[in-house]
Image (cartoon, rainbow, N blue to C red; front, side, top):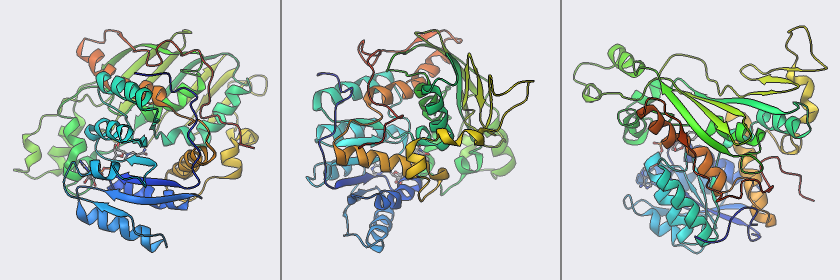
Length: 414
Ligand SMILES: NC(=O)c1ccc[n+]([C@@H]2O[C@H](COP(=O)([O-])OP(=O)(O)OC[C@H]3O[C@@H](n4cnc5c(N)ncnc54)[C@H](O)[C@@H]3O)[C@@H](O)[C@H]2O)c1
């Protein structure tokens, strides 16, 4: 444990040298986006799959960059990547069980680290990330791309300009029909993601929904999450999908799915606001992160985007969110959307990360945000297990949650 990492600036880097650990679906799709950001080099890549590492290295050289160092000698070879002295930032895009061990090792080896969602899966893991970030003075960043989505950033600017009045309620979710991918023999390495549905019953992917809503409510910058209560529906969707699609004798028939299809959580903040979180990847439905915000002046709801703000709107009729495009964040006006998937938010996130590292600014997202947004993973499992009993959020900031400090609604650097 050491002093707080809140508002602590990166040392300035002329070039940000990135080591990527995990070049499966996500890591391989982020690799060209790192290369597209000005001032970023990829100096090393690691995956237990040598094929994946070779493909990733080729993608780097095909883009005209020097070949990165390659690590594929087993599941601990990432440690060797992290010992290199030409890596400033490690990007971890491996299965969830590896996120915390890899992030801890990165920081202990003097690297800042960006972790895919969630940063950790137990409260102990999250505290260890906080302790280690403080002790090593390295940043641990939940790379929450949805925080950089255009609608979320526009709503955040509007909140900060006072358009919603007093913020009262927000909803976020990960509602994504993953059944086909979960049962694919080739998509997730070793089919790691379905395995979680045989072990835990809770919100297994809270950060996409919570990150943006936490920003609307200035969580860790004036307010804090206090307690959570969660309920899960029966677990039926994956078993039904298996019945319909998997042949008799397939190994999946030995599995028992315990993760209730929908997990719904309510979180209360210190200021009394309420956040609703939802998670469902096991049932047919179009994609949604809900992304809703209610204030004393009106409401925003996404999927599809619609708005109702007094005095502009009246008569129970939704208004057109496109009319508020002037409120777009400067990253979307001047940088975005940029290349890559997810509507361009992945690139925006990496652009901003590299900008803060090159200019020597504090990161938009620190270890306290990373731990707070990831905590509903473990806390919802605990609440569901205890018949929806309220479970307290740890205060990862150690009492500093009222301290204003930089966040996702960044001003444009001079
Ligand atoms: N933010 C987003 O929008 C987004 C989108 C997709 C996935 N993700 C996250 O990205 C992560 C990876 O997901 P994915 O879909 O790419 O899964 P994947 O299975 O395609 O990729 C994981 C990779 O990690 C490698 N790996 C496993 N153990 C390793 C180890 N010990 N050392 C080195 N490599 C190891 C695997 O070989 C595989 O290539 C997950 O945390 C997932 O939740 C985030």
